[in-house]
Image (cartoon, rainbow, N blue to C red; front, side, top):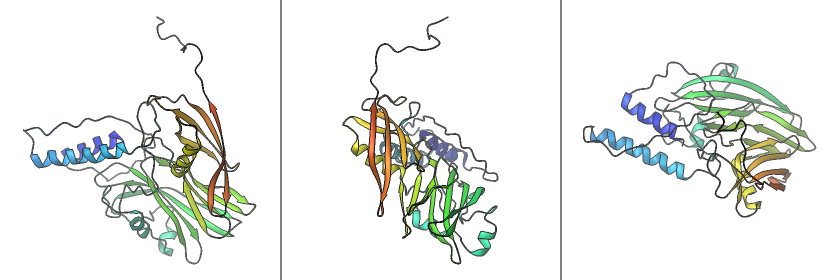
Length: 310
């Protein structure tokens, strides 16, 4: 998690409550640094114990973060199963993806109001940001999606995307959450025996959290930007890794990313760029080729305007 979330949690504990009467979507990534000290003698032992437990949890998750960095902060890499808001309305209260999926209502009454009412049944405050429809010729079916903002009772905002195949018996394809933001799903490819639905997303640290669903007409499979980055890193020369985010152009079956050199500071990447070509083989979304263009510093770094100018 980002340090901001730890700070929010400590404020919530001290304040005792968090208003949830109004939900406001804030798609601007925020970063902050909060240091946790040992409990003070003047404070209640129980209160301080809770704060220290939260700090330990968030520090542990920071240690598991990926290598991408924006402006000095090391943002975590998004894992597909991350769940932030549970049906009980609480923040990270222990539910998993299956529990969240079961809490998505796709009955006729819910679908009639999906433009204004959340499909996700939760005690958290929920606001529908947008909803839409995608038609695919390869499957001859219609897909509908709903984008929501969730305000849990005891934590920061999260966003959620639900995508399902519409029909006599609607079928849920995915229900995913991020602590950053989503863009509208779209179908960049629908022909030549291949169908792709792309859900662009970023997590709170500006790392890529995109989901890519694809089919050859015989069932659906999916991959994530996280999985693609792991595969691409294995194809890179020693000492170089991809720096999230990955920019996808799935209409052309390609992607682009900056490259991190081992030892690069958190604020900056100096390794160069990499272009990736993708292909779908059977049920596998593969990286068929990568083109790495290494950047080699030459001469003195100059700034405009000069930093020392008066």
